[in-house]
Length: 476
Image (cartoon, rainbow, N blue to C red; front, side):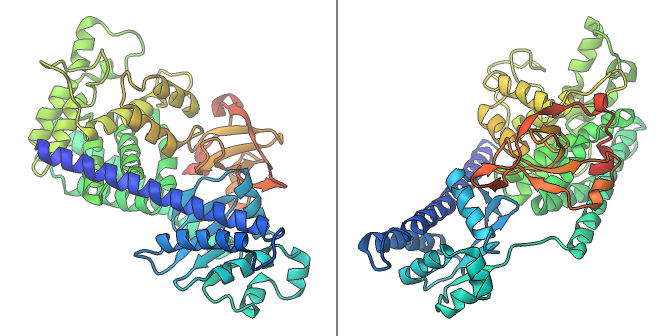
């Protein structure tokens, strides 16, 4: 078991670092392209310095082409993507992206056989005036005339009505999956209450679908974790914790079977609370020593309940037992030093964030997501694995999906997607506050620039309850 655990941790680390190295190489390629475009205005086409810059770029692309048929970059709403990986950009790269989009270039694909001469020709074309280029049929036609055959340029991507309809349909399916997951947890909890024979089939199916959904579009399902329903807190908490844990597993590039195992373990992490009286679970005031003892026993009960469920993994039992064993106040206490399993650490982190932002019957207001993130940051190295906290924050953002932002332009934006810049997510601009903005094209990226400066920046967050804005209209 220990060898298996070490192997899985090692594979996860290698996969994560391999992904970071790939993103780093992609950023280097774009930085080299930026340097080439700047210097082609200074040196003649055949100058050795210019040729050397083109050769360095060609070498970087050649390295990226290993095991690939092409190296593809896409520019979407102020963000740079290499394949499906978001690439962090600085101000110089933001200017380069503006240079491309002003010439109606939204995608650049490099193919095997690329030459330094083609790279220099592309740099020369990119420095011609956009108006002149447009009058001559555009840069794509110009590249063809220059016989640049190993570089494909694509137009800026636009979202049409058909694509918008597909997005709405995807959101509808995601909401149905979320509700189906809640029903699966209910079924399991009610089965335990009634001592009925339990079946993991439905829960396994739901979790596998959640994994596929998150691998395809992490933000869509994660957005629903912002919908806090106090009347069904126990069930929703388990589903939200599972979504967050699965999302972190995908962010860390775990293998799919590991992610599914993590999802099931997170879904069942609080199953032991069925043994805790409901009046204790929902008590708004301070618990008595006896009540607190009942709560502290739920990890033990959870492991025992999980062990009686046919088809449940050992990992679900381990996570149910370990998910509160973090920090000095962790429980249940065991002899010797506590060493939580990696998956238990992930579930602990997801559980804590979800609990901090949860809606309870006795809460007058929820904690804003950005405040919960600050609390987790303070507790790294104390209660939580600092590496996992960093990864979690990178995944969920400083302003998680569902956060309302006040922008320096005077606009109000609802965070709907994350970008590589934790302070600059994509937002839906709200003007009517009745949900109708979902039908418009009011989604913008805070990474978008004009003249090298950001078009919009965050001034602060807005409490949706105080502002009487129902974010469910936008995320469900």
